[in-house]
Length: 277
Ligand code: WAQ
Ligand code: MG
Image (cartoon, rainbow, N blue to C red; front, side):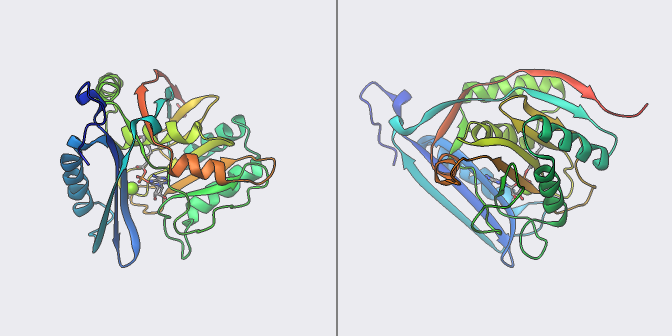
């Protein structure tokens, strides 16, 4: 690691993906994924470690890191979706908004309902949060992922330094600059660009973070101010797919293996207020 792969200078320094996973008693506490220039690995790993050690889901008894180098030519450029902030009174109204947005994105009603129920009940065996996302058939609502505890993990994606700075400035002006939003936007950019992917539904598994979103290629990132009760530890993600031949390999390969570096941010659009007066 660390070798420059181009004689013209540091702009062409190689990049690596960095992953962290923290667990306690075999249960998922937190995870994080970055795609970074090698010189940034050390400081990013320290930040991830601090996060794992101080997580609101509890204290980890096992933390695993992995680092893998990528060649420049493997890395694809990416674009962040536009963000719309949907303001709701409570999680029940939030779920109604999520259901309507999923249907607008082309997900069948039954599939949207099924995903909302699975996340509500805890989608991993034993009613826990999964480590990754469910893969859901956008028509039947059937769960398609092989391992219902791990699911599918979107990985190897990040923002360029410039894109991160522009995004932080835009989110600051909109009043919700925080790590959850930045990471979720980055992840959603990769997810909605995947082949055969119709939409994504997400809410956090952190007990003190109640916001979530629905994302799709047609309307971008629709943030929903509340999708669960304060204190609730069950959260998760659903990736809705539609394939003619049930071939999920191309979608999973894009999500888990193709490195994506986002160099263009989207627009923060005016919010929508669903609250009762
Ligand atoms: N790939 C697939 N699923 C994942 C990944 C990943 N890389 N990382 C987390 N998950 C799943 C897993 O089931 C977690 O339990 C769940 O998502 C929630 O993860 O606009 O903080 O990191 O204010 O807790 C969304 C709203 C916040 C942000 C999402 O998710 C906003 C959040 P968390
Ligand atoms: Mg979390």
